Structure formats: structure tokens, C-alpha cells
Amino acid sequence: MTVQFCPTCGTLFDSSAEETLRCERCGQTTKNEAFWQVQISTSENFPSALRTRLKSHTQKVTKETVGPGPKIEVECAKCLGRDVVYSQVQLRSADEGSTIFYTCLKCGERWRENN
Image (cartoon, helix red, strand yellow):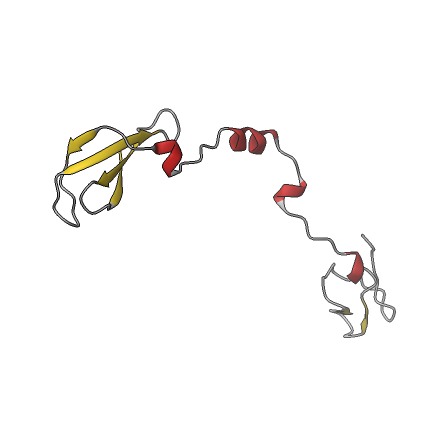
């Protein structure tokens, strides 16, 4: 990072992502020499053991991974049908309940319930 001073009064400029700098003390403007050196970093630029571990335990839920489960009698709010299939998936942390996905066999409506 380049440190810049006002050419008129010698005041230290604050770092900025602007092309020109304005002195807070005397109002002098000057070209920001560090303008093209500014780099924007995101969390992806900094490896983290915790982030890596969390990503490795991510479970992707799709129709294929959930699949049709056992058939039970639960009322569908959309068509009032009583035949549904369900599947159970652990989406949250292990010390919390699982999530149950229901699919109505009559109309295809899907909903979930956190257990």
C-alpha cells in the first residue's frame, strides 16, 4: 500500500478507492497513486480450516437423494388428499431434529416439517 501526503501542507491522506484524493486540511486535490493498486479480497481468498470442514459436511438434498419414502396418511393442505409419501433428512446440526419432506400422491404438493 502506498502512503500519500498532501503536496501543499503535508497532511497524510486517508487510503481511498477514488481516483483523486482531497486534503481534509487545505482542500488540495491530487491524483491517487494507489488507485490502480487497490485489490478487493473476499473470504474465498483466505483459506480457513473451519470453512473447509463445514463445506465437506454439506449435504445436498435433491429428489434423487431424498427419493420416495414410506406411504402414510396425512392430510394435504392443497387437495385434502390423505395419501402421502415422506422422507427424513438431517439438514441441521446433529443435536437438532431432522426435517421431514412430504409429497402428496394425489396432487404432487410438497411440504416439509422440521422435527
